[in-house]
Length: 340
Ligand code: SF4
Image 1 (cartoon, rainbow, N blue to C red):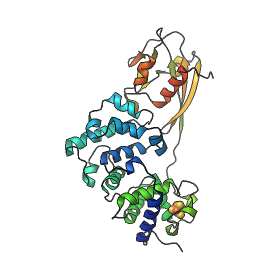
Image 2 (image 1 turned 45 degrees about the vertical axis):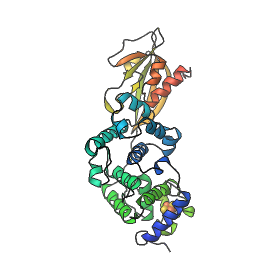
Image 3 (image 1 turned 60 degrees about the horizontal axis):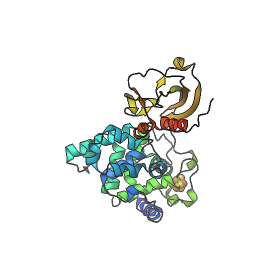
């Protein structure tokens, strides 16, 4: 007989916390109560897997370079983007700096703990405010990320769309009612971890789940239900591989949109590059786009456009560059071009 997790929430919390005490993973942001460090981890993890953030050293590099709001607030674009290079969604890095500046200017460098104070900071929405409250201050935060949404939908056998406005409200209510007011940090961490381990997308591991006795899902593989379908649009981008007589590469600095301040290979319209051979082709995803990057070898040289410049490989290594272009430059320099 299954028990309703809300009605039996004291027992539910105990089972979840007991499992987490024995099996919870040891992440650096779980060893700190510094709201700045928690915020950095939350913003990094918004669009990036834990394995990438930790395994490739992004979190530690960022915290070494900008250990507090004071250092981040005065970071220049080039240094900030260089540390963030490869994580994508570069707007997040600049927004973090805006948050740091606001904490300094409005609160003397001390993070507020109340909802209103946190939500008034730039770049901080309901989710991030809840995460800072719960993980840094051990205050109620009812954090609902994608993992928690899936766990809640299954626990409550919720068959409406979790990404619709009404669905989000229901999940937030359940998260608040289930949250342990005596231990928000542990409770929210445990719920997230349950979603990363046992209650995975697709086929969950219900046999090993510590709260299976409280789970009302009739068929968890069909949950959560989502309303939105993402349509992927394919686009071609034509980049130049062009060196001058000194071996320097022609590159461009983005000055508009989400990649402002990042360096890349120059791009041209398809018609302009039609006569130049494609020496490498790589695909990457950006939000809802699938970009097929075609690299054309330019015979001779071209006149740089505004914002373009010749850079040596050593100079380029020190500049922030978006990950797909960095990869292409490295592979082309190593002579790995694949004629297509
Ligand atoms: S019993 Fe299965 S579906 Fe329910 S919370 Fe646990 S892992 Fe998820």
